[in-house]
Amino acid sequence: MTEQRLSLGTAAARNLATTTKSVPQMQSITPRWLLRLLPWVEAHAGTYRVNRRLTFQLGDGRLTFVNTGAEVRVVPPELAELPPLRHLDDPEVLEGIADRFTQREYAPGDVIVERGRPLDQLYLIAHGKVAEIGAGAYGGETRLGVRADGDFFGDRALLGGSEEWDRSVRALTPCTVLTLSQEAIAELTDRSEALRTHLEEYRTAPEPPRNPKGEAAIDLSAGHEGEADLPGTFVDYEGSPREYGLAVTQTVLRVHTRVADLYNEPMDQIEQQLRLTIEEIRERQEHELVNNRDFGLLHNADLRQRIQTSGGPPTPADLDDLLCRRRKSRFFLAHPKTIAAFGRECTRRGVYPGTVQAHGRCVQAWRGVPIFPCDKIPVTPTGTSSILVMRTGVDDQGVVGLHQTGIPDEVRPGLSVRFKGVSEKAILSYLVSAYYSAAILVPDAVGVLENVEIAR
Image (tube, rainbow, N blue to C red; front, top):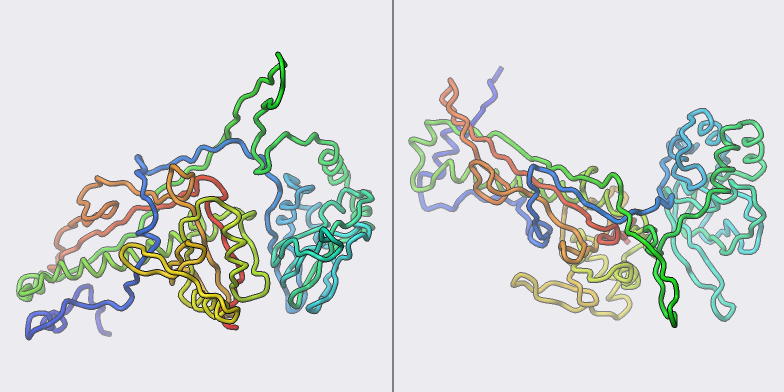
């Protein structure tokens, strides 16, 4: 059995010691725009706490489904994401509700819900995309929004009222939808005292005063005359604000002393090994800032800031929809294939996006907001991806990168190279570490256009 090498061999090292040569090249190096564009904030003691004004949970989560063949079922604990069932932690009750759903299939163009009909069913979208259609100002139709996998509508049917649908819902793609009828809901509440009590408490609970963003209201008086009694108020804060701990990407670089001693001219072997290792760590750092489930931007964007494409490919109207949801959008971030798909849609419509100068380069832009490529945003096997847009900086309550400078053996901000010693096999070891994270200061700092089709 061949023993696995732990360091660079002499044969490869000689390639840097003879003839006129280049430094070692690395094709996986990317522009890493996200690392350049984020303003970096010091996170002393390795932790950054984001204090916010108290926000009431509006129950706008998404649901998860499992399937056995063609049969789809909602994961029972996920039903607690529905506003009327929020904080219901009885597994038996949730299991009973999940068992009562009926699976239905809809073709593109099918009407799932008709405006004006009784609101007597709860709908969960297991797969597919639907459009919400309302009445326009002059009697026509107007599209109110698009919903997709994991969304729901009709949750007020759980309360057993006599409301009517204020909008129609129409399938845009083939859809798999789970439905729960009001009859099944009535049967469940008759059988379960816990469910009946929970729904009654939700129905009768007073609505806490809040602003359109869901934050606890601040009482003010405006437009009064004379000596009116002014309201007293205070600004409430979240009792348990989120804290971001710095993540770490590390590796141990090994270089044999024979290589460092004999093949170190004209290029420093250790320097070149470290250079390429640091490049790879920075690539992984950007990947984590986008995809990490704890602090990555894709997973931590507020659900109310996630929207669906109006059709499939990214259109100018979709990017406009992203921009209108926040102030001071600094830049878009998209996979290069997604940017190409957007360019095709613009060409099809006879629209030509402008360009802006950013960091000495000419970059494509939409409405003056630059669109930067980032190959760390995943593309699914089915040819869909996402587009991020964000506001950055502490002063604008945006997104900030987190790091800690001044760490021992630091060679770049937040990145250290520490010599570990020489092993019994005469191998030099260097511990290379990068500490980082990212924080979204307020929910609307990041928006995501989801399920963007780039293969059409």
